[in-house]
Length: 191
Image (cartoon, rainbow, N blue to C red; front, top):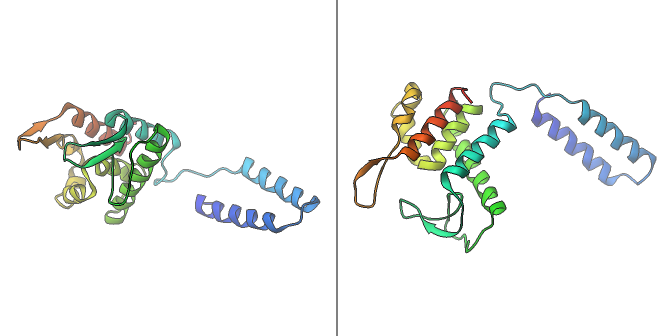
């Protein structure tokens, strides 16, 4: 049974329970659901990402980005808050705590991974790794990297550790090298 099928079945059962009168039938149904959940085992697939890996990725991004509770301008001049969330038009973040910042990070990373999966055949840890790159560089820039053959030579990923500073000078960053190396390890299943 896939996770999606499981969620659909559980949602349907939960809906049934909500409309049943309180009583023996409802209690029996609750026990059946609990027993099924306790014994359920979903086999990982090639496109699965373990909670452990996902949490490591989130922690890595958080350590690279650092936390800022109030808005600041990133290296590209974009207004940013939390763990690297670029404030979008219409968002009015003045101050965030770490819980909200992590929620924004997860939403942003998910958006980036979805973009990668939409433009490539990648899934699982590979789309997660490219999603990390997109979170850092932007989906447009990563789409360009992919169009120019990054996925055909993934070992070159650590070379994408340069940025142009405010004076127009291209600089190699040890911080970006650390990020690209981690992303490569996620991609190639070394983590």
